[in-house]
Image (cartoon, rainbow, N blue to C red; front, side):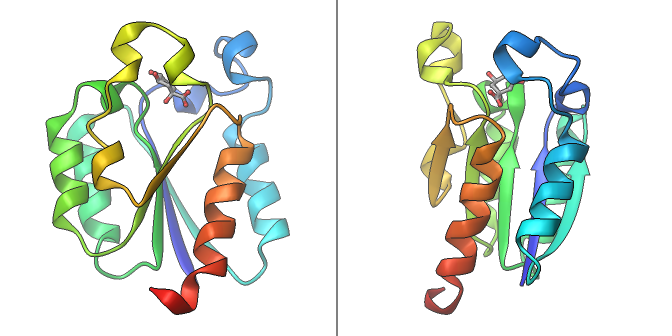
Length: 143
Ligand code: DQA
């Protein structure tokens, strides 16, 4: 099965960025674990700090992948365009946030993505990406 992971702004700095909030592992570490632990899944990974590039990546993956796992980072809280892109595609999307956005500043409680996603995994660290993958793998035949 084919899963595209899309990460938004500043997630390229995972491991160095606010380790007390986001941990000390880089996303490369996380991706290596996903590839090892889900041998039947072909992962495509895309990260961008630019909103329009994330919209392009959603559209690109939106009609030919079995699942999209997206962490739009700060754009979660601001981007109508990313929410609209998720609504426009056929591929199911799971929203992941490493930190518990509901336990942080009020502006992080707003998501333009949650209502368009099949579900959201929030506050479980990088393990959220594995849990989202697990959902796609175990629901593959039901989609
Ligand atoms: C984040 C939460 C967002 O509020 C923040 O802007 C991020 C990361 C998370 O994964 O916890 O950059 O999406």
